[in-house]
Length: 269
Image 1 (tube, helix red, strand yellow):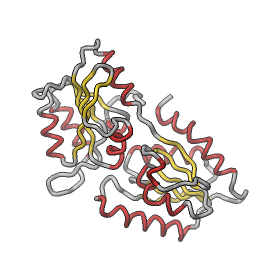
Image 2 (cartoon, helix red, strand yellow):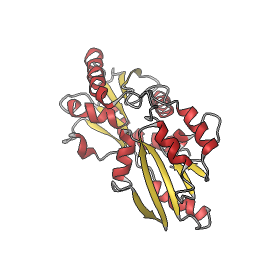
Image 3 (cartoon, helix red, strand yellow):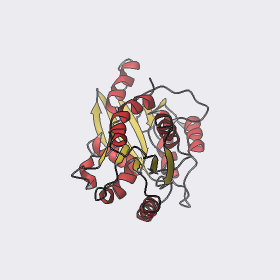
Image 4 (cartoon, rainbow, N blue to C red):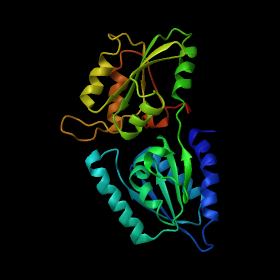
């Protein structure tokens, strides 16, 4: 069973509970995506929702917060809220943290059922309580367990590991929730260094210098909010190709979203 298949099984219960509270004629569902349709995660959960509820009429709003700068996120949330007011759906689905962060506090004062998925942060940071009309599923990547597993695969010879992320919302939440908001910790006997990077040039330099800085391996996490020197969002496939060619030590990746389009992948959830 893949990570996404597991997610659908976990998502089904609260989602269906939300559906069952609706009138019999209810069919309209507004999906508010934190990202956009070209992002593999968005595409996969939208396919899953459509297959789970083939009778529903779906509409979508893409906040595109992976590519747009943070100072535009509130504006995107206002546009999403207006779409909700215009369409008056029977059910709303939030995909990922930024949709819930910016819109959850508004929706808790409505009577519209809301279901969220892919949430990394602690719900108490989003001013949602009491959760009367909102339910969903948290996403908890098992990174510490995977690092310990990687060390076992390498015969317990891994002493120093570099983990790379972009500086987006999800990366910051992972640093806080998984790494206790520190840049360095020991996991299963491995000295793990976490780097959150904003620019492509920082990524290139960090990768190139990994070996001389004593790292025996690099793990690639998220990278979708990286920008170049002009502030333009970096093409993810190009970045992965560059990383493949220029990493001086073995590198691994967390999850299918860290893989290029033509690469095999292992289910590391």
